[in-house]
Image 1: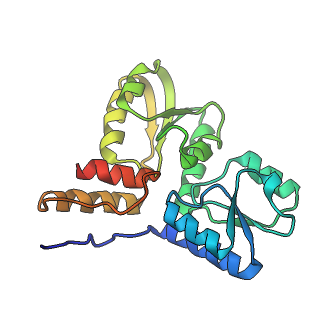
Image 2: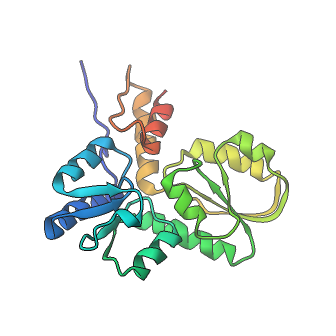
Length: 227
């Protein structure tokens, strides 16, 4: 049996750095509170728990002497403001590429455009992106794009782990609905690279195994592409 491992299999740098930040913080402070899962991978979360990184669901659960770690996917502004107001020690593990998307939506919104995010409803990253501006819309599928009303001016960004095939299909529909459309492709480079490598080996191998989490949007998308 021949087994091929894709060249760039493994964490992207954003996840790698976030996990390392969590381990370093636990080593430094003994205990760290993490608002939600740092990444969507149960094994990683379990390992961090053993190292002293506890998951909490809200700021009230945090021990006053424990720093709070904000996860890789980004955090809504309300939680940032509340944590600062309480004087909590904030450790920011947000992926820099996610911050770039936040910057882009705010910049486009200043141009008076309706913000549309192509992404998964309820996903932590999408929720945080949407929170950067008022009255943003999230579109997850071509069917949802078909259902929206016509818009004069809009700015469109993507969740960082979207597949280009889904984005292209949705954009083709949005172009028939939006007179003045400003699109910024915010699919991150590690995602594009991993998707391309999976599509490449799918042509020459009998089966592809995706090692990841069932709760990970990235793992799910890689599986869809492989199929």
